[in-house]
Image (cartoon, rainbow, N blue to C red):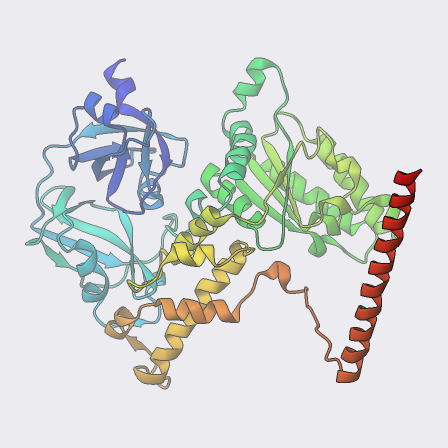
Length: 493
């Protein structure tokens, strides 16, 4: 293997969420002559690069490198892209670094940002930083985005205990930088198998259409996602669009309907035309059952025309147009059967209720920005939330956080104040008791319409039922003796 081929690795999703760490297979590190804890230079797209600490991970595949969303954003790469890795032995400990927050992430926060966010982030961590990089710091149930303005010496340095961190100055205005809190694959949990299928069906046609062309087959045009409300259908579609860099056009089923004749079909045609102009693109049709019901069961002429128009548009998509249609519904059997055939919605993927492992994934995603107390056991919470979908678990985490906020507003916070001190925010933490209270106040959305009513019966009714019970017992004995007599007469004969 050439040195260049060895240096080039495929970007994979990180297991941990550290902004300064990338993980490689031990064999890959050996080929690159790297040791655990070495600072490396990673080069991405459009001449973007950054510095990270390399760690060995045997679960990482050899040709891959694991990095979190913050590192990927700084390199302008997505999952599946290729980056190059280089030794970086000349990185020195920094004398001074100038770091400023991004303005739209500190709204409502007052007090010392250094003590609340930067000091805990850099304390004894020896994090390498690069001039111009953005990074996300979580603390006090808030996430603040910072930008490295200057580093001394050089463009790269390691923030050591004696490095002076200067954070004075006006916050940085949001420019054309990608937000680090955009939805990505690592924000979707509990649907690992389904995500692998979706990525295969969407990413390959959009990013590598030549694969299908070389073997002479047409790439898939559409995917139908179905599952209970809150299972993550819309979230998955947005994550796929963000990670692939595709143009995303969202159509909400009920919004496209119009009382004017022909306008609903016109809206649908405009959406497909816009998507084809901005290819590669993803058209996401939410609540597709509301605009494409079974034609034999609909009484309105408008609904029938919309279904026919949608069929025509999907058939009219050119196989090389680089447009994928994703439909979402919680009632797949209500959709017109003509849409559910090959060439339209080629694949149907069930996003069911997550199991215990899936619920734990979702809880970890929703609590990664939360400050949790040491007594919080997410595995136990995942075990006690049978039947909860992603939205239910998100609501559970929000309710637990609200319980924590209620406690603070009663004691430490004056609601009349215009702002809240950063030290008070930093002292807040969600405890196990908050989660238990939230569990008592919530239930799975699938059971919200299920109500069991136990009638209150009088004593007379209960006594009457007892007499019926005794009569039934006598009848059972009578039947048993009759059967026994018949059996004996049969044996004697």
